[in-house]
Length: 301
Ligand code: AMP
Ligand code: MN
Ligand code: MN
Ligand code: MN
Image 1 (cartoon, helix red, strand yellow):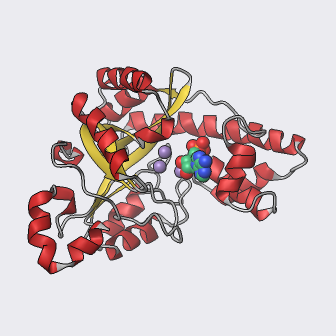
Image 2: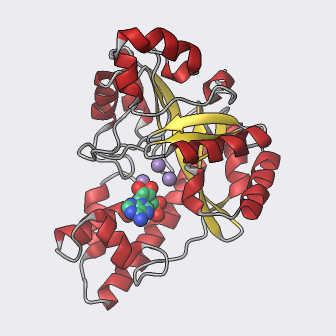
C-alpha cells in the first residue's frame, strides 16, 4: 500500500513529512532474506538482482547459520547499484525455546562466526538425521538423502524437509508439511538445543555486527516473557529488533515499536523473503519504520 502512495507524485511531499527515512522514495531497505545458502530458492546472485529490480537500495543477506552466500551477493551488488550488508540469522536457544537473532553488518569471514557456523552445521546435520528417522517410523523413507541432496553445500533446514514431503505427496504445501509433520508437537518435530542466545549475541558483536531480534511476534510470548527476553537480550549486547516484517499489520508494528522504544533498541525492517511466487512477500515491500524508532542502519559503522 505504501508503494502505491510513493508512486503517486502528488502525495510524495506529504508522505515525506509524515514518514521516516526507510520509506523515502530513493531509499528502500530490506535487512532480512534467504538464499540457496540456507532455505531460500534463489542464488545470492539472483536474489541481489531481484532486489535491485524491486528498487531495494540496501539489502542484507541473512541466511540461517551461514555466511557462505555473502561473497557472491557482495560481488553481484557491486555491479548492481545496490548496497549489500553482510548478515546472518543465528538459531539460538533461550530458556529452552528457539529464538532467531539476525547479525547485521558483520565481518562475514570473522573466525568466531565461521566457527559458530560450523558448530551449527553439525547440530543441523544431526537434527536432520533425527527428523528423517522419525519420518521413516511414519513410513516415509528416504528423507535424509533427499534433503541433503537438495541442500547441497547449504545449510539443511526444516524447509527442505517440507519440500521433500510435498514432492512425495505427503503434504499439499510447505505450510501443510509443517502443520502435519514438522512443527512443534508434530510427529517429526525434534527439539533442538541451538547455541545459547547470549553467546550468539556475543559472537555477532565480536564479528563487528549489530544483533537484532528477528520477527519478535513469531515466538508468541506473553508481555512478561517478552520483557524477560528483551532484558536478557539487551544485557547480552543485543542492539535492535525487527519492527517491520514482511507480513505485519499496523498493530503488529505498534506492538514491536513499543518494545523497541521501551528497551532502547533500534528498529530493523526485513521481509524474510525466501522465494518468489508468494504474493504477500516481495523483496523491499515493507511498511515504513515508525518515526520515533532509531533505524538500525544508523548503527552500521
Ligand atoms: P529450521 O531453522 O531448520 O528449524 O527451519 C526454520 C525455517 O522453516 C524458518 O526459517 C521458516 O523458513 C520455515 N518455517 C518454520 N515454521 C514454518 C511454518 N509453520 N510454515 C512454513 N515455514 C515454516
Ligand atoms: Mn527460513
Ligand atoms: Mn527466522
Ligand atoms: Mn529468516
